[in-house]
Image (cartoon, rainbow, N blue to C red; front, side, top):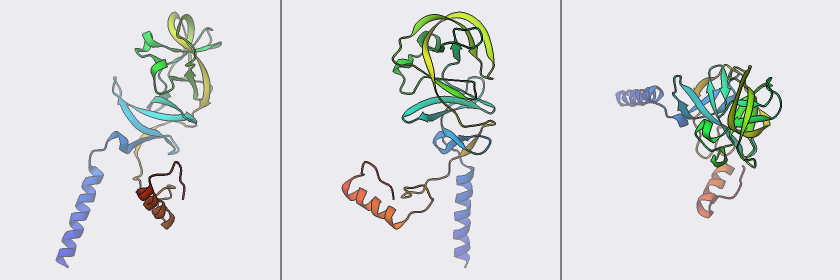
Length: 208
């Protein structure tokens, strides 16, 4: 009886230590006001404020890196325009202005602008050009007039983010090894798939 009590106490103590312990970025995700997952925390931007950096698949096999704070989200660049009222051809800033070459990024070079959270990505087939830009959408969704010459890349809208602020950080639900369809259970057919994969290698695609 005493030994059972000691074992239970040890288990409870270990669980509480695990719950209160440090977490890595791979354990965290950003969620919107409805608890919908925006993306796993990929990095933290600590330039003055602590913003979470997430990666989102905006369309099949098109991934964008975004910075998220409590009441907003932004891409790699603001979205600029030739016109003075955020109209005309859209552009994203390029190499000399953002210290990186978007044509070499493994992610789609992105910006976010109205209407809603429309995601613009750089046209990788277009060469950067020095052009006069007269307005841009700021991080609060307003159009700001600012005329200057920039090295920029033409951009086009690819989709809209289906998320609403405020955003917050939450723990990811722990995964269950062997659960292939995400229903939080390991069924006999999933065990069979696992055994076959161990013996014969993983198939190109499998579903229970």
